[in-house]
Image (tube, rainbow, N blue to C red; front, top):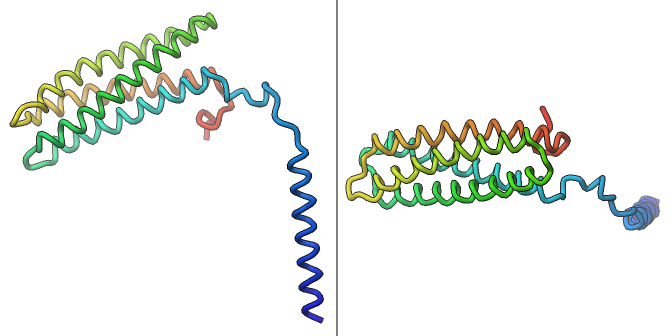
Length: 180
């Protein structure tokens, strides 16, 4: 009796799966309006945010390393500084792309915010250049590295906050901008 119930249950379960799969495959593709977060400006903004986040992580880590290490290994400091610079450069490029897109949309408020972010990234890039010079020396000046990273971190935190505001305005229902 138990075997018969088991077989019957298995047949019902597999039938449900087959019918469910047919229903899923019969569903239509989402419309363009439903795919609103697949457009280029959204992904340009997300890429810029991601690079700002990565640069912020490297800046904070490099500052912490310079503060806590008994002696700073120039190769390690240079590696972190190079990654910081790579992410800053990529963020600047993505923000410039987003600004160009916002300009064609005639979105003055977003262009103003992106200008502010660009200026902050430019300040961070200037500080990064000074940080790289300190990291290239045989004896890394930890205080100089910490000073540069502190300014970079401050600028990146401002940029991150401003970018969150841009995303809330531009893409209010996206998964990365929903208020919790």
